[in-house]
Image (tube, rainbow, N blue to C red; front, side, top):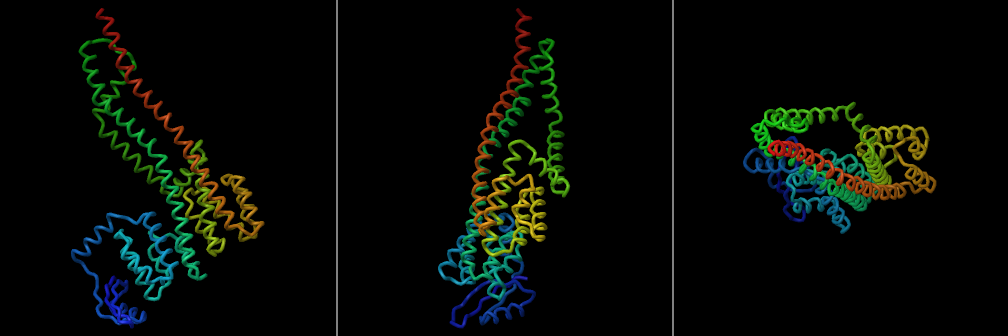
Length: 404
């Protein structure tokens, strides 16, 4: 249950906040441990205020941008010498996302109640990932939480920038697909039927291409609801299939085999692998735990399986680079760079260089894919429209010649 409290510090300052606890007595106990004198403790119950907050929370989720901003601001506050609890209290007054605000209030109360920052974050796994919590835990143990938060901010900003570039690159091809579909729908539902009426009145024998086109047009007009329903059912079944263990593995395997797309996926996953593992190692997380977290961060299940096997081999004394070399999904350049990092004892920095290199490679691969997709979409659209125009003009020529 959630309680709002008002309490007085030894200095006389009055503070307010929220605490999650099973009952009011436990809240008072927590406040006393924090050396606060409770003035009022009120249970958060139903009412318009709670309903309004719940409504906002459900309408807006906590995105990567929100977490990145929070991490950067917390890093700046900790570097300025502000204590963690006070920094979190300040951020609760600056956060605009209502859902994140509610979570930060709970985290702040837990920290003030004696919980570690990492443990407080772990209670919200949908917002703060295992990677995030592990790095914070390492920072608390080492006493360098401010430096860890800065590294986390850099890591999240890099991830956000990569995602932004990907969506920007795919915007134009997606727009072309939508335009192509809309043009075809307009032609089949409005243009072709008008010609169809004219051809039927003329009584002319129509070419096979025109008959086929008008048949498709009639089918779309009569059974459009079946087409939409079938398309929606296919999407639902496909999404369900790729969320099963077997389906996800087969889908990820298929993506790796597709020309150009497979190369893009590999480079993207290698950069995520290197960036995540390097960041974790730099923050003092042991390599086995770091590989376990990295496996969860990597999206492709085939490559994630390779990472899981790496952890098993490292337990037996094998080098990371040796196991990477046995996988067809890790390029020789990445393997050799990791091998050099192991030899020099500077693996974490080498992995960050690998990540930077393959993030650049990913960006170039995305540009190549989108550069090829754009003319392909134009050609496909031109062929569809050209076929429709040809199928409609041919009977007109035949009718005009028969009249002459």
